[in-house]
Length: 526
Image 1: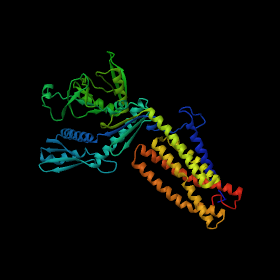
Image 2: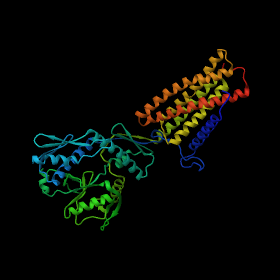
Image 3: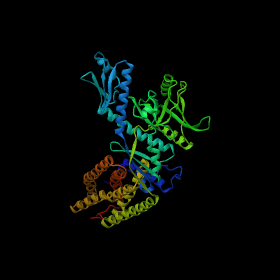
């Protein structure tokens, strides 16, 4: 034990420097850290800083209904293009079915409809074509394909939410997935959840669909709606319109959207398309000159102008009953992208700033009391020397935890403070195990040096066993928990590593220096 390798001294020195360097910035007000110090600081969680909490649910059932409807429209369009006669095209719970009029064309219909299937990254297709009696074909969407679509929609929703909130200048807002189809949005410092709901809740799904003029508006209102069409509600000031369900073009190819003004100085939204979108938009407008083309936002018709000439430049405008504020908000939403599915607010909470300050003060007091209690116990149980060495290791442990939280950008919440206090309380467990083992070895007749060696070597198995058990529990909480539970687990996990490191290495180095200097004939704790 008296021989301490240079690598061990270097490791401890680097750890202490790291702890001090990344802990000190937290003593300065945010944004006022000196340039020679790291700029990272611990983030205060929602319960300390105050703010808003939203629990959102992605409407995956609506996503499935939309996928089925799009498949049905693809079936009709494909068979018409191939000049295959059909009847009875209808949606089913898991896809679509259709009856082919000519028995000789059943095989050709199955082949072309099979081309609608999309290959999944994990292998296989998202749809299969099954032959049924009476010349019918069933297109069945696979569960793997539907699940892949749901996964993509949830990940896309998280990214869209992040872009929308960043676009408006809101900082430190983190949308995080919870469970299968839920998203938790925490916004420290944001005390108006209604504002967040307005920004997040609008799907902002922009589509372009052809107006169905095969029947009059009166006939459509009376319920005589042709297959493949539906009545769509008008936006503010606009009347309902009969539109074809088929989405000819969507906002996925938008690269920019800005507030603008037309010749009458009325607010509009000007948008620009990427190269693929420009080609698609040009093709649609070229093939439908003198027909009405409806611009639909979240299933509400904004406007339905006539296509006077092909639009080939990749730029167009959206006009409607906009104010400057609503046009600018629509531009922001379109730039951020559309949500692939509606979001339902399941829960919302607001934490006031006063509660956060009270929590901070309570956390400071409880942490200080925990530290004093541990200090008093160690000094009373093991004397000023051995107890003091434990306290030095505990202080370094605290610095390392704060430094790690600052470096990783973790948010410190009330449960995180609880984890910090628990870590301080159990950090001296390793010292207690080592010291008690030393006492047993002395009582068995060993010399102080041999007792110290045995204390470290034989207690190590128990120390590792206890801390690995704690670490496994913390990892389980981190994996399956969310929000405050994960904060507690993260702080506890960091504490496990730092407490073992400081209790073993720092204690060993300090005791080795004392043994070299004092050459004791008797251990003070025996």
